[in-house]
Figure 1 (cartoon, rainbow over the protein chains, first blue to last red):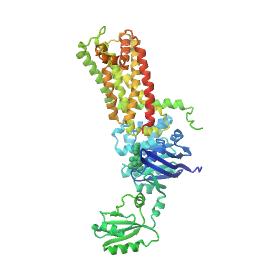
Figure 2: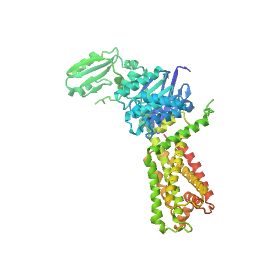
Figure 3: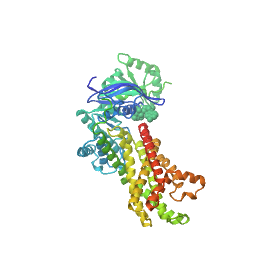
Figure 4: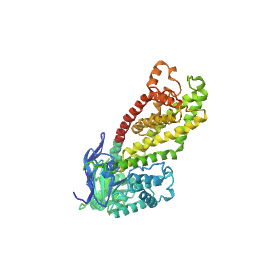
Length: 315
Length: 262
Ligand SMILES: Nc1ncnc2c1ncn2[C@@H]1O[C@H](COP(=O)(O)OP(=O)(O)OP(=O)(O)O)[C@@H](O)[C@H]1O
Ligand SMILES: [Mg+2]
């Protein structure tokens, strides 16, 4: 067993009735790194996080946390992990401080330590003004921050964050990013799911993209960007009415059309004559263009390319 | 080594986690005092209504009606109070609190026992309040202090057993509004088809036969006898059989539901 691997997901399957949420997912996370789990709605991200945090048992396959099988020895795993689930789990009748202290107590920390950590976390998450208010009166973003803070009070080796920044304003998001980076500097391993590709790009060391319960790609954001070859070709039509005509004329795999801006983007495979071919096709269809540009893909484009969403249906 | 997680701290942790969760459950009533206020006002209204409006028309041989009524009302208080156990658990499930607790290295039992124990404490508090109000209205525990305490203990235990039924309901419906309705709907007829408000021998034969074996009737008869100082008869052991039967069955059912609740 490589001791450097702290999370090992090995061919996991999970179905709810006849919904196949996970169909053979495997990947590994090195100690002290941040892994981003990306995927469209319903891809199976939350299901996987729930399996890794002992809330669900996989139908098939296994997951190891620090070499411990999560399905076999869940209680050993629980003392090493922290979880902030997709929907903020805070007790509305308790104050922010009481919520944190309850979770700290349930991690069996000494009373004094619980207080010290709770106070520090409340400060770190800018909740000091609201410590003694019932969380029922908190805004969505405040609850989210308290929820993430609760997942940290046990100072877990491994932190699972299911869409931690959804619903946060840009300032809170940046603050949370900084907190996460700080934790990783201190040696914590983080697995987070996100809908924001920018977040994955900025924050994570490695990215695993899942779609319909399967891993469709994994690697660093740089590696993923180079999977769609040389880059993308961005074509601006002179008349926005001609977007559909252009998509039809190009007749290539995986175009992305922006109707509002009149831009069509297509992936460019390395070593092909895409640029010259494209220009020939545009000429043949007699569509007037205002600009054409070859550039590096963004992570969004990689994501859309791989998960097949938003692809205009041919004809 | 496998499964060896019942460490020496095992029992210590079960106790400290249960205390933490009970405290949390009690804070729910401190922060939502309306839950307590309504569960006190309702039985007081019943007390007034039955004592002053219907009471005159109800014959309770050998007892004045207020002394007949108060022990029954106290049982009704804990039965209705126990509905909150299921509501609280359903709320925790719906809001993801249960998921949070499951991911913590805490004693799993504490989620359920913390809630039911908090409701036990709550019931005792409301009972004492009710006894004070009843005293003002002329209720006298003629059986003496010791028998009164014994009676209150029995009612509290009965409420605790009902909390476990409520827990099983809350964990299976998973929605606090539904838990509220589902918790009340079946106890309502049981409460009236019992010796809480009237002597059951005035009921039609079939209903009397049902009411006679109802856990509510045997418990009310026991605590009434204890409070007013009359012979307790066979009621006490019949009540205890019901209480422990319910406790064992429904705590097991709740644990099963809890394991499965996802
Ligand atoms: N308890 C459940 N019962 C039945 N189906 C479920 C259940 N939970 C999830 N699913 C289904 O499993 C699939 C994966 O769901 P999951 O919540 O893991 O997706 P996700 O990637 O987290 O999506 P999102 O980005 O919307 O949070 C979906 O098709 C979902 O409908
Ligand atoms: Mg999800």
